[in-house]
Length: 552
Length: 54
View 1: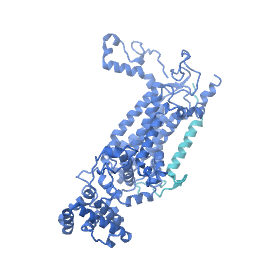
View 2 (view 1 turned 120 degrees about the horizontal axis):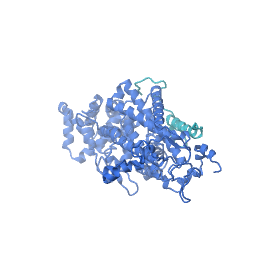
View 3 (view 1 turned 60 degrees about the vertical axis):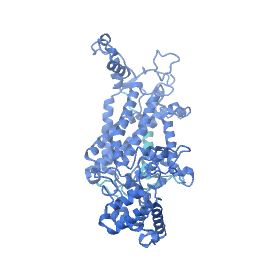
View 4 (view 1 turned 45 degrees about the vertical axis):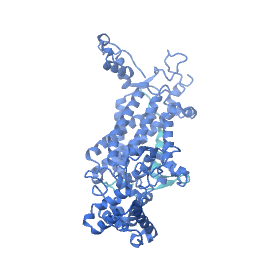
């Protein structure tokens, strides 16, 4: 839509849309970079295009309001997110007001995806990429993916049980394609900064670009329209490309956004007040050791004998050339390298024990015996203890026969005592330093046991239960991840005994990457891009316009 | 399950899950959101939009 009539209010009466004021052409300033940039901006986006007060008459369907509703929801997300950011990440766990604001953030995200997906459906059925609008579609699709990434990082930084489990599960997907070497989902500090700074910035820039493209190219006309085309368009000219000069209707874009913002804000407040939001407490190492001591001791033994999940993980934690997932010949996980090195035995068991060995002679002696032995002997002791625990009734360490296990029973027993006291939680435990924001070691150790997974499976959060998509309690979760989690539920990916299942994280990541690329490049894919013509949902969207132009 | 605030509807209890085809299951919360989304989309397409009074 363009309306480029001369504006009598300008000093020269020149076209206000081109940004060239009086005297500029003669002053020699047109060659300046600043002038060129200004001219380019105003040529592309004159004020009446950027903030129009009318639009084509065919823009007459409720489906059009979902774009501005998405922007409004983003506004509410931003306000509630800023409120949370100013109060800090512990606030929403211990204060009623904080929990309510967290609920605002939770429900505004739900509304954001709700309206954005309807907006996307609407644009698909309109084939909104027609008439050189492919980039508008592509930027919208990328903004959709960026929104998923931003929301996902938000779920990681909830610092509750849900985020603990999501991080433990997501690390495998992220690591399987090498991304985990740079984006460590177990590092809360990194995830929090990415969530509140980097990703919102990227998302906002994408959305601004998307909206400017919408304003620049106008709203796509009805499919197969032939009327209301510019009378001077040539016979070979695509009517979808020419600027709309047909009938128009009034359009108060600022009022529309204001009304949408208020509507979304009211709905968010209502949902937050009526339904609250999930915030189940995180599982501490103290809770694990108290509730499931056999699992804790068996896990500690497996860290010492090298059979634990972390010790045998491969990149980015451990240098094991044959470990890790691949997509056929693509060993992305291995190629990314060990960038988050973790020595499981040292980090999870031995180092925490050394901090208190000076006050515990028995522990000091056991550590001395361990340190003085060759690696093969250490391995033999730890393996013997792991096997003994496996044979003991209920895995109970008190009933295990510790023959040939050397100092390992004493070490794991001492670690259990310290874990139960709470000494392993927080900065004096597995962390390193006073200011602790990286929980990689704690979550990896916890995830090596079965207790965390048992708790998650009991709440239907398991990997083969669409776990990443679900939320604790009866709350809706990340339903926008339905297709991603769907693959984990079906064979061959659900069966880890075959290579598809063993490499499921990497292969599913690749499948979703290809599907995402397909959605993004839909305007260029023959057949798929014609679906909106074959299934005429657009006849209902533009039925008012089609009815008025029947036979034209 | 903990909640700092008292909500009118308690969603902190155990979630309900619906088995779709074979092993595929979905939580009732997610299913409700998706169904409502489809209904709203249908309404947005079908409900008449006010005409410009001009």
